[in-house]
Length: 248
Length: 221
Image (tube, rainbow over all chains, first blue to last red; front, side, top):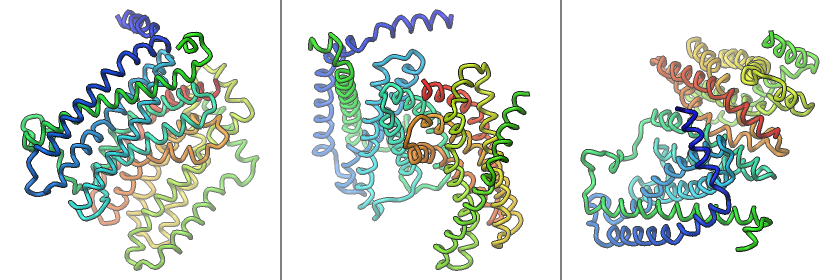
């Protein structure tokens, strides 16, 4: 059973060559672009102009329409790095090596964005730019894990070796992230509790929540777009001496 | 048999290369002097409270500094390559290498640090807790660090990179270790922290041999 499953995956992944991926990405990129523009635009319009003003935080709360989606993507991107790393370590596929590094770079960017927007939001709310609170700290540590993956990749002259080393680090980091998060929660936090992830009844008004969902979907499409673009460019540069790359 | 062979080899090497085993201790003492000078403007009561935490951080830093020696010598003279080609129990051998590295370069610190703490006026229970947490914490740090050392072994400038890779992964150990020591200082319960540290140790005991052998194979490819 397991063996059959493995051979099935093998057959599936053997079909993924840089050339095929290039055309696949090229066909996907316009759609990702379109959806990201639509969702981010609509979400931001609703969030910035239609959503009611928060009675406690005033207009300043509207930064959540950037902050929460980037925080969500910082985790989503790491999951994507992890899955790509696992596939590239097990089946040794060039495309997934490139994809994992591209996701790591974009994930680092979103983590940075989440930190910066959180800090800007924190200034009027708490009176300081930074507090040593559990979620902020684990986000910061996540940022450093992303950076160490990227640094390790660039430290190697041979990019395939670098990507493989970075993939192993990403897998070790993935096992570590829940542990780090749990241990950082050890401290008492002054952050407000999560307001979206309560599945039964969100404690946020629906006029404020829907734009958030739209921007989150839009950001996810943007992430896919950015990863595909970056992976496509990297592959084209790596394969510039092959016949298919020259024919483009 | 093999376990004994590797450990004897490492100990022989250490004994022949002279005073290597004392270097971390001396380094540790110097760091303690630096800490004491830089925080001497703080009140005496707070100084005593800071002391075990300072010692914890110094031990952690020393553990990072000597990480790259785990595989470095064997990599330089080519033993490591032979060993990866020939050996059929690479995971076990890696664990033994980490163990001997820990015995030679971290255990001295684990023994000396509580003594220093006691000399500087820490009470007995906290000193004991410091010893126990270091005894559980430093092997975990060696285990995590060996992955980073294996990943960066073929790089020329790897010193800072190893620290950057390793430091975020050390944070849980630092949190539980310092929390246990602090709780013990204020006569509070710290059994949860010790259990969690043991848990971390066993998790990395499982992960490290696999990740490390994979990483070494990639670096020596």
